[in-house]
Length: 443
Image 1: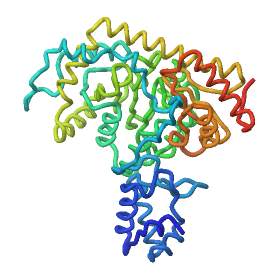
Image 2 (image 1 turned 45 degrees about the vertical axis):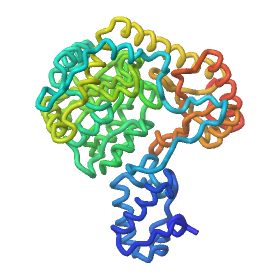
Image 3 (image 1 turned 135 degrees about the vertical axis):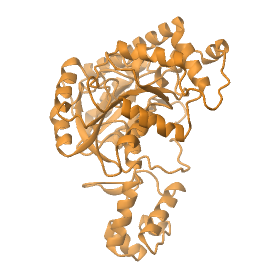
Image 4 (image 1 turned 180 degrees about the vertical axis):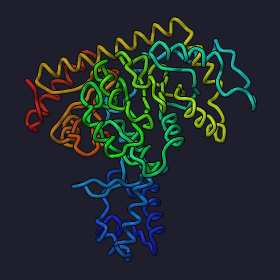
């Protein structure tokens, strides 16, 4: 019995088939990663022609509901843009969850105390969308890192800013160069907008120039990269690699460059931006990891035309990001004690990440994590490793949602809360689990 028969999806047209599959996903009857039958088998099941079914699958792919890859066929995407009853997998009692990418709550500032110090505004319609003091502070921070902050706005997080920039410059079917492996939520966002992902291989220093050249030759209209703290691998551009990439994209002034500096002050490495001198560019800076994930606020800077388009669309929709949030973030930025706390957090995150890398290296386990809150561990087969570690009390993130074609299997470990004794225990367990799997090792 096929998936489609099991859920009794019937259709008299391509549109009805699309609606039926979307409804099954929204109801939780088709789950992320679940394969669909071949076009021919699906056509037989629902009584439509292969041409009609192929058109329906293409529309579902354009909407980001399904993904199709060579040798893997068509399956429900890892993050289909549909509301559904999907919930996170339950964490077994006593297991240590290192899968979610969260910062350490003990290293976040006290928001209640900061709120108590704030004179909260009564924002009315028609007022400026960005607090002038917040904009001035953000410009100083951007200039310190070599980014032009003349044109900026405030958005509801880094992905919100990226989405708005892409809407301002791209249309469905455009190819977007992305890191591979890369941020799963970004992949889902691009698919939901009908954009085509053009994977660019990376190493510990970020995008490989030859791989990026291939994506540009394939017709990429935009480039989205993480200059430091890359999720999931922790890659970070250094001065040499950044210069190589700048020279590579220089002959293409029409290419839209988007830099996602999502970790910013807690990334644990220096920023090397590609934005200087670009005609079409944008850069996001989120406060989520340094100040708290519930602070849905990011600074978006860019060229004048891009920011004008983003602000125009923002005015047609939500209008502005809450001035209460803006006031709170400004209060936190101005507080010297909070600045010291954020700097301390960055140091702690670096030590925790490096400690696990050292323990893994001592046991011959290859792993990556130049910066950020995660360590990326290549494995022979993800599901087996995840299951074996779960039996030992560790919950890690499978690499599949973060990987596109030609990116080998791996697992992601969030090290933000990983204590010293835990790093040793996890390294021992990882080494033992990987030893019989035939995973790649280094001496």
